[in-house]
Length: 260
Image 1 (spheres, rainbow, N blue to C red):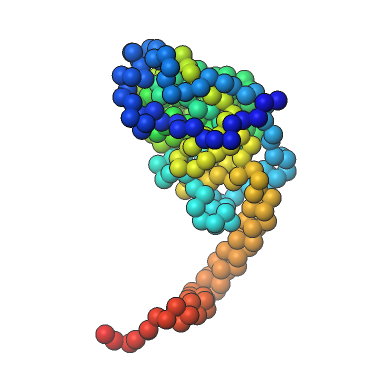
Image 2: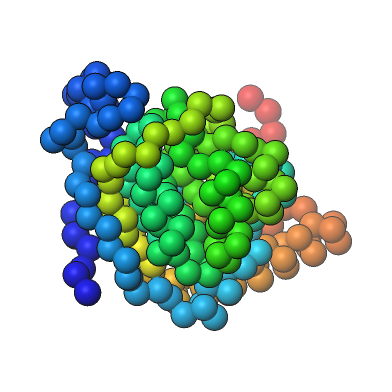
C-alpha cells in the first residue's frame, strides 16, 4: 500500500494568490493544472476500536487539556444542531471548493466508525455535504463528518442522525468534477489531520488526537477527567477556590493588598 505524503500540501488555492476565476472557468469545471492532486488512497492504518471507544462521550475540553490545550479546530467548526457528539477515526479528504465528487468516493472507502474530515480550504460559498450523503454515511456506519467548509440540508442531516460539524451552512450545492485527494494529511480548522487520527466533537467544537499520541492522550484524559470530577464535588460541598490559586500567585510574585 502506498504511504500518504509526509508533507501537508496547501489546501486553499485562494490563499496562494490565485483568484477564483483561475480555479474555475465556470462553476462547472475546474481549470486544468489547478493546485490539487488527484490521488485517492483507499487504505490506511486505523487505531484499535477499543482505544477510540475510550474517547466516546468525552468532553472536548478535557481531551484538549490532555493534549496540551491547543488541539482544537477553529472555533467556527461547530455541530450543525445541538446535542451532536462524535468520536471516531479520521478519513481525510482534500477537495477543491464547489465540489464533492471525492466525498462520494470516500463514503465508499469508509468503514464503520470513520469520520470524514473534509478540507475545502475554508471555502464557505457552496456546500460539500447534505442530507443524501448523510443518509449514506449513516447506512455505512460512519461516526460523523467534520469540515472547514459548508454543508446544507440541516433538517435532513438531523433526521438522518449523523453528527456533522461544519464552519457554515448554505443552500448552494456543489459540483462533481474533482480533482482532490483522499487519505493524505490535510490542514483543517487550523489543525493537521492525518488518516487514522482520532477526532472528538461536542458542542464546544472538535479536537484532534494524533494517532501516535492516542494511547498517552487516553491515559491523560482519564486523569484530567478525574481531577475535574473531584473539583466539582469540592465546589458543590463549598470549597469554591482551590489552594493552588494563592500558592501560584505567591510563587509568581503577586502582591495582594486590601486597598489601593
